[in-house]
Structure formats: C-alpha cells, structure tokens
Amino acid sequence: MKESQNPKPNNPTQGNTINAWGIGIRKLVILILVIGAIVVLISLIFNLLAPQINAYSQSSELEKNKAKWESHHITQYRMSVAFLGYGFNDNAIWVEVKKGKVISLVDSLGNNVPPENIPDVGFRYPNAFTIPGLFSYAHQTILAKPNVLNISYDLTFGYPTDIYIDPYVEPCCQDSDIVVRDFQVLP
Image (tube, rainbow, N blue to C red):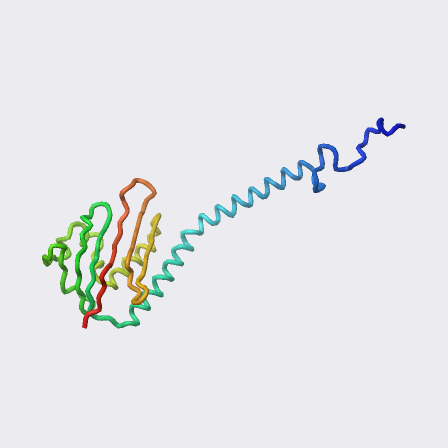
C-alpha cells in the first residue's frame, strides 16, 4: 500500500480529537467547565465571607485604637465635630468634655447649644460628642455591616477622626460622615 493511501495519520497529534497536550477535546471542555465552576464557587464563598472578614478586621482595628486612646488617660479635651451628609447643615460643633461628660457645645456662630437642639444629631448620634461615644457608635455600626464603612483614626491618640457610612448602594444621598478635627487635650 502506498503511503498516500494510508488512512491513518502519521502524527498522533493530528486529527480532531487530540490537542497539543494529548487531551481529547471532550476532556478539555470538561476541564474548562470544572475550572469555571471552581472559580464561581470561590467567588461565592468570598462574597459570603467578605463582610464577616471586613467586620472582624474593622473590630480589631477599633479595639486597638480604643486601647491606645485609653492608655493616654485623657479626662478633659476639646474638639470640633462635624456631621456631614444628607439632612445635616455640615457645620461643626465645638465640644468640650470633662471626665466623660459634655460640659460645653458651641455652634459655628459661637452660641452655646444643647445636643437635643442640634437637628437630627441628638436623635441619631446621642453619644457622638465624646470619644468613648464615638468608639461605641463605630462599634455598633461595624456590627450592623453597612454597605460601606470607612473609619479613620488619629495616629497619636487613637480616637476616630472620621466615620463614613453609606448603608445602601441605592438610593443615593443616604451616606453620613462624622468628622473630628482640632482635637486638644486640656489641663
């Protein structure tokens, strides 16, 4: 029989059923489907666990900074606290705290103001005028697992300098931000 009449290919990698790695097309398709299923499964597991991992990480960071704050034994301080976001007028309130109690709240015009007279703040954030209150608020917010939560801390004293919350992907304009500035330790 002549070589040109031989129905079998001389090279076993020629033909439709075997690729360059020696794997049949069906096996290759099954392998790709299995790898795809594994990727989807890992993605689902990550999406289910990510909020718990993030909450644990944020709780750990909060506890570390709370311990830093407590190690300084600060009993009297002054700071400006701004409530930003939908429904707030974005004006900072000057707060003076002594032995864990608010002794003075002054608005941006220099007027003394009781917390309950600050629109929406006294109701939504009753303890936001003290550092321990801010730690408590941050902790409760971490437990609520909002869509977005970013907390920044002071590098020296550990108190929260910014607590940004966006509880929903939509609708817009539901985010809020508590910003602490101009912190001063008082004698």
